[in-house]
Image 1: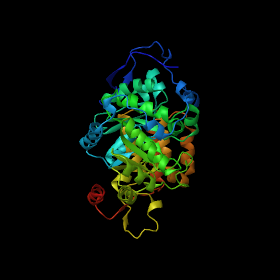
Image 2: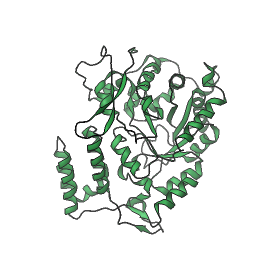
Image 3: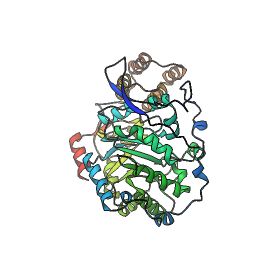
Image 4: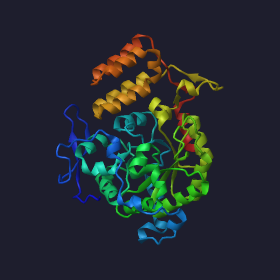
Length: 426
């Protein structure tokens, strides 16, 4: 089913509890909107609809590359030149916050930017729900003028619906990104993310639709195929379709456990060598030594981090958890920062940039996970709260500190300026 509706307008709302002005999305046509504006909480139901495109026969990347280009915009050297010009205009960021469902929202992005992140992705947004539901738009996508460069990521399986969603956000971001890498069961059910690797014709049509109709560049985030040549052909197809920047997660669709499966940086390097557009690497970036190694070994323009940032949002400022200090011959300072400090800073950002409480709860658990192992009673009190307040969360941190619980973050006894200079020079 396709949804044909008038385009929405974007406007800035002022929150009564602070002076910050943030982005909200309002649909000016309510003909197909749920009358009460509610978002179905059952994500699997929301994200499991197959589009008519899913019935098309899969094609190989080679077959799709042979299809004639629909117009001059999508072919020719000028498109590649524009891709690089745009990337350079943004300052060629090397340190990026990866897209994380429910976890790379505005306050967390701003926290990571405060500690060295140079660009960030939004959480994955569902394009169909985004076009239909005003409440979903206003809660799930917020931004501010300091939140740049910004990638807004959508999952999709219908080019027209994806374009409608993308047009709502394009004035407020630097790339509209297509999620082609989500490996979770919900993505299989919904026919999006990494499961579109089985339907390359549809993938090509999604990229072409945006590339030929938006005023901002299109980016894509993918996983690799088990076969390297398939991965290279896939990446070339995306570039040919109009993708202006490609982020490559160095694991296959079946390699979901990042602790069990190492990212294949060699495959990422092969993609980087084969393409003419900027390429980013994702996978196994746990601290700044990994950043430097990944940039050097793959030749990519930048690196993304996801899971490690959730535990340690100060990763890009040179800090690391104790797990990545043991066994090192380097000398580390452990007195400057801990996760409770970062959580308090995050909570203050949440007061300034309101987001759903489920996101806040998730970050509290991720940042204080090790602390809760020492004081499980404090974690139990958190879990018992059906409704959170900032007062309760601040008091929770105070209880841990009063009990003498502290797990520091570590930084090499090298200035942050030196670390940044090394990365920029890589």
